[in-house]
Amino acid sequence: MKIFQNDLFRKTSQVLIDLGIFALAWIGAYFVRFEALPPANYVHQMSLLIVLVMAARSLSFRLFSVYAITWRYISIRDAALILKATVPLTIVLFGLRYLSSASLSIVRVPVGVIVIEFMFVLLGAAGVRMVRRLIVEDQERGMRNGRNSAKVKNILLIGAGDAGNLVLKELQRRTDLGIRVVGFVDDDPDKLKMNIQGVSVLGDTAKIPEIASRLSVQEAIITIVNASSKDLRRIVELCERAGLKVKIVPGIFEMLDDRVKITRVREINIDDLLGRSVFQLEKHLPDVSSAYKNKRILVTGAGGSIGSELCRQLAFLGPEALTLLDKDENSIYEIDMDLKGGAGNGTVVHPVIANIKNAERLELLFDKYRPQVVFHAAAHKHVPLMEHNPAEAILNNVQGTRNVVEAAVRHGVERFIFISTDKAVNPSSIMGATKKIGEIVVQEAAKHRSTRFSCVRFGNVLGSRGSVVPLFQKQIALGGPVTITHPEMRRYFMSISEAVHLIIQAGTLGERGEIFVLDMGKLIRIVDMVKTLIRLSGHQEDDIEIKLIGVRPGEKLYEEILIDAERAAVTKFEKIFIAPPAETGNGRTLAAVSDLVEAAKAGNVARIIEGLMGMGIGFHREVQ
Image 1 (cartoon, rainbow, N blue to C red):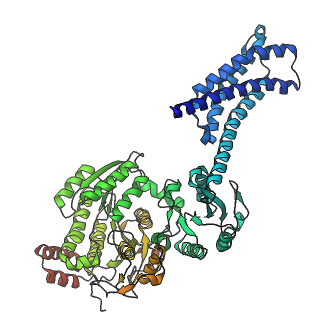
Image 2 (cartoon, rainbow, N blue to C red; image 1 turned 180 degrees about the horizontal axis):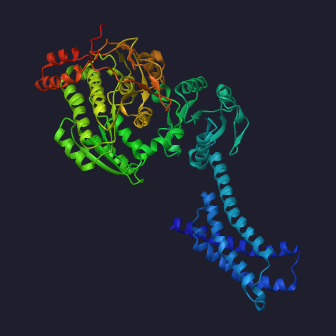
């Protein structure tokens, strides 16, 4: 009842205030037009029409739902609504002025009065709502500061660009959070001393410790959505030196809708410090979108880490239909619910449970859903597990790939993108060898078919299923020890969202089976990554023991992206290069695939290893 009474009071008071504005605007317009008391005939006109004008204005405001506006959150859009509600009567007054006969002089209001009254009503109605908002916000801020002055948190925003502006606006709106933004820092000299929504740019990032000390800052939020991992590491080190807790806005791959909400500001994680790179998303978005918009797309392995992110980003590009294929029902359920929860662009989502090893099932699915683009991400990827299960690796990664490729060819798929791995280069593991064979199967199909085939090769992705990062985090949470295989073990790393975005870009380029290589940056020592994780967990590096357990079967100390025989060529995308198709051993590889599959069906591990050794794909065992 109290809420109803408060709401009733708010609306009633606003109607009464508006009526006062309408009356003052009408009378004031006459006084301004005549620069004094109007002549007697116009005083008579003003007096007779004032009630009608007030009633008409009030009715118009009600018809245009102006009283539904919550003045507490009035915006430019709401001001536009007030403008629309003000225009009709003004048009009527102009019509009466020029279309009525001389005998109806009482309704022939001077043009100057009509224009001035319109401006007074518009400015008064919008202005009074804005003033009410400012007064109440100031009162709330004063009350909050008086009650919780010890609890108010001083925040420094790092980055005075568009994202910084959005975060500031959101923080100023959320007065309940007890946060005070003391300023911005930005390395752009042109932004120094700028004032953004009443908040100043205080200096560059090098001054973070000094500014934090001088203004008693407790927390910093990094609001640079395209910052490189190198810049982020430098900024985080400066904040740690100043004793600041650090948070970050989502990266460009996490906020494709260009919205920043305070609930999405999160803690710094390992993806930010090791995996985030700078991309010009807007620069290439039209080209990428045109390749997938209104297309029927099928993603195999759609429930996996790469596959599910592929589905999310592809859905954003507006395909006609998206078929999610995976043998794991739980993961397909999750990505299906995720996509349908964020649906709105008309894309039809088909969740499909199927195994790529079943060629007959694939044939039925391709016939039913008629995909025009196929992303083949389904694969067994865990290196040590595949060393123990080589037959399954062959059946899934080789025979399964061959099944998908043949189904795509038979059904006239326009584009086929095979997701490969850096472990396919000079493979020392069963998994790497199967992915290398998969590349060759795709390249061979590309020689004779109209489908545009391509392969995309990249290294480890942070946070994927089977990734070491969750294991390390769990070990740190338990107090250690953190187990690593070798002090010099190095890997390429990229965040899932970045890798997927590059895969989607590369998918627009393929013609005849090219292998596209993603720029993974520099090799990162696993031990250095572990130390970073320990610091991010709030510990000192010496607090958690790092234990060496030895290299596992099939592992290399250093992964390769390109081999000497594959000289990279540039593409129109900055971080995607082309490795020319490798030789396939004069047909030995393809001729041996069927024998390899038969050996896998029989579970003959010795014959599998012998077959891989003789296929001319560079398969070997690392000598540790």
